[in-house]
Image (cartoon, rainbow, N blue to C red):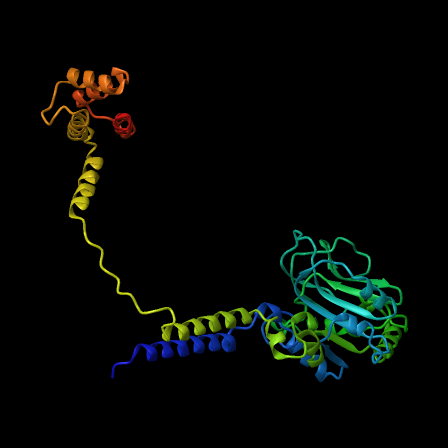
Length: 392
């Protein structure tokens, strides 16, 4: 069964639409964005650590709104700990509302602070309040104030008190990632970092492993008053429904326009419209293209020219082209078809054009020598003949 042109266009449009739809639905997710997310099961994700905290009964939740919403929230009244796991290394700086929020007694734990690379080995086992932990980074913080974990090359984990609260930094974003499930001390250390409290009988975290039994008992009592833990998932692209509605607007079209795949959808729609329009022949009747007529003479000349160029046979060109140019000049001067001597041709040239005799004499003399010329000199010789024809 032979399909008509309209049916072919229709099937083509359907195929293009299907390709666009598959692209929109099956496009791969941005794995880099999920790095450090508690929703991720990839090696650099934190899904296993989040499950570890949940199983041990720690009050931990995911925050999926901008930080400003957390800072001004009226529902969260007690001091809390916000864990922020960056997908890439970030600079050690705070914005104004973040610093004010910490000063009120809250704790901010930031994993993945950009620090210079030192001569330290990339993979090391470090002493910590929870025993040996595996650290995979050569980056170190040069200051030792507030050090929690570090070595002779610098500090890996440290804390800065600000007002009633504090900020805890690490130079690695993968302290308790899924890849470290075989190192339980890493999970325990991060759990202690996000649940410790200040000024309630608990000693600084870096000195806990050296305290006596009475101090450990006080620390255990203080740990029961730990702050609720929130994990910032908004920086990984996860948003609550109300946030999506605020950012997207009231209709689905305004939401789609903010998505990168909307451009692909728009392009597919334009192609579909053009295909339907073309199938209706709105651009007129089809025009049959005629095959170009082959010019055998031109093809022969081009082939001969290529052979002469490769062989460097400029003397052949001087002889053939020179004779033809001389004959054309005689015709223009009204001297007939029989070749004349150079002197008669030069005299007629001077008499009819008033130009100097040397212009034509140089061409005729160079032609008579029939010696091989460089390509540049040959082009100059042809340009000189063109100037002679121009003065006629």
